[in-house]
Length: 171
Image 1 (tube, helix red, strand yellow):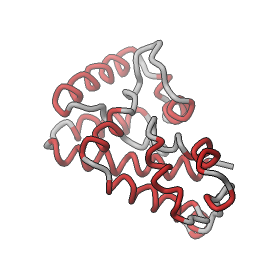
Image 2 (cartoon, helix red, strand yellow; image 1 turned 180 degrees about the vertical axis):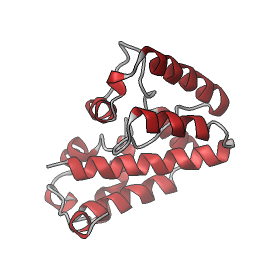
Image 3 (cartoon, one colour; image 1 turned 135 degrees about the vertical axis):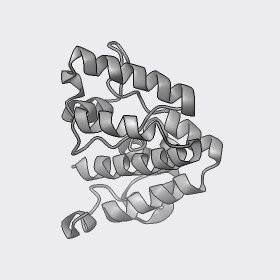
Image 4 (spheres, rainbow, N blue to C red; image 1 turned 60 degrees about the vertical axis):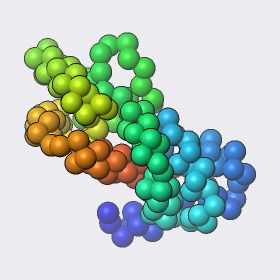
């Protein structure tokens, strides 16, 4: 985070719009989980960091079931062709070069996706911004050795990072 990012004002503040309008703008920041934007609406946030903090607080206050549903709302990395992704996920995965996987890399992603979900019960999540597919495969392999609680916490932390990147990307 830089000082410029820290001070970036929100393009639309909660006090400026109705809850429905706010939800249309910020409801997709956390993948298929508009309850997080709803929970942050009354925060009074005026900057990206303030809204991000309010959203993180909403997630932290959620039940384990809500958090698990949030994690499970995320797509696989390098998903099978024909898998529906949100526009944000498409852009993020493309930026990491996941569309350019070799057949061997694609096969490894598919196997790791299956193995990870079988072990942990949810998809592998990493904020791919700034990473390439080789970096991501290395992280994937390493994190397969973690225990379930470590991965649950890591997934939530990565989701918060993704949300921050998405907030910063808004006009």
